[in-house]
Image 1 (cartoon, rainbow, N blue to C red):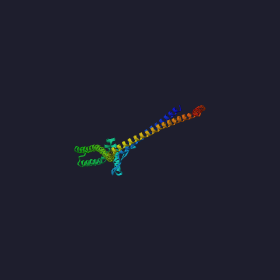
Image 2: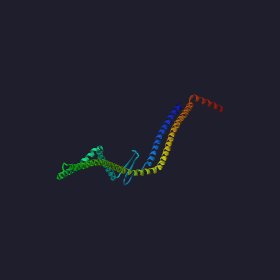
Image 3: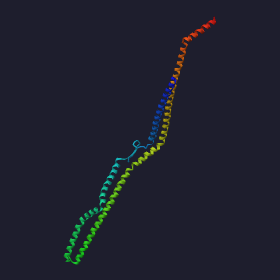
Image 4: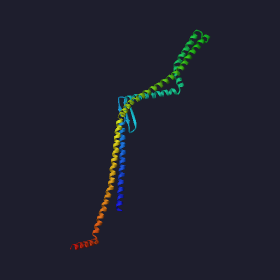
Length: 282
């Protein structure tokens, strides 16, 4: 019974050791595989590149790419955007109410034209009066002709004001488009550096992937070795306890034999045998 109990204990201890070894080997293998994957990823990452126009930086941890212009080009880009914003404000004022804008332009022009027209009418009246034609049919015809001519000037000014507003709207739109295009073109300059950095990472990627495979294989082999050692530890624990149990049984048997040889019955039998031996010898 004692030997069976020891065998059960030995089996439990051995299994526990081997279970612990399996857990540690799995953890070590997982960490090794992650390290191999990190190595392959790191070796395949694009390179940061900087030049006279700006720079491109790759952040694998944050999963982002940063593109930057040099200070001079950055200032130019900001100037483009500021101009576009200002022109957008002017354009909004015109597009919001082009009729009102045309009316303002017309009134500004009429502020110069109306005094001239008033002077022309006064001069015509003076001439007609001097010739005695003021109020006559001929004088009325001349006055009507002058009024018609002046009305045409005002009508042309009104149409010109509308055309001016539309031209200004088109002009502002063109300026905004040009400013935005300029800002975008400047912002795209670092993309060339990014392409160069990506090409460098791509060129080194095969070597990094191959190195990752070696690391992965080494990690798997190390994990198997660790598992093997713990397997041996478990087997040794079982063998050691079983060996001690066998020794205990052997010692117990020896003690039992010694006690039997030392019992009175055995000693009496031995004495009788000795007497018979010596009697026969005599």
